[in-house]
Image 1 (spheres, rainbow, N blue to C red):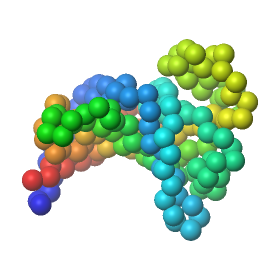
Image 2: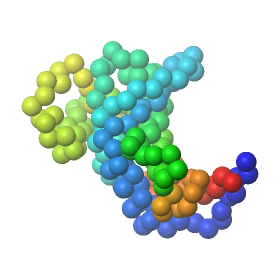
Image 3: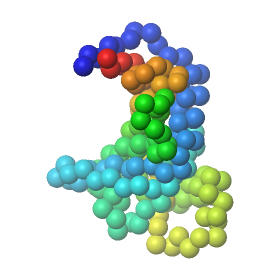
Length: 172
């Protein structure tokens, strides 16, 4: 298999549009963390997101993932619609950044985002859970409808919250 790298940048407007579309594609995400020994851990969670593409979710503070986040803060999240069918036009997003358990006013902001996406959560007993947020630093976009087959577009989140194209890779 060959990897072709394109020098043609993707516009910030297009990156934002595709990123938002991919985050809306599913209400579930896979959260990946690593233990201090480097062992990977993954778990699914319902998530909400806000600008600049930061993702919030609920975990028990006693969960392995929560302990990993407290130790290193490093995390990645994958979002995709699991109803996709082999051979059709595929799409998904991987998000990389720094995660942390939220405290103070950040909890209220996360709760608002979460309840906006999941209105039934407003009445749920969530006492055993805490809000976590991934501060997104990079995204890897896979949207064959927008970028073509077997094409991955990487972008970084700039300090002002805009997306900046980094690279495009096509697998042939």
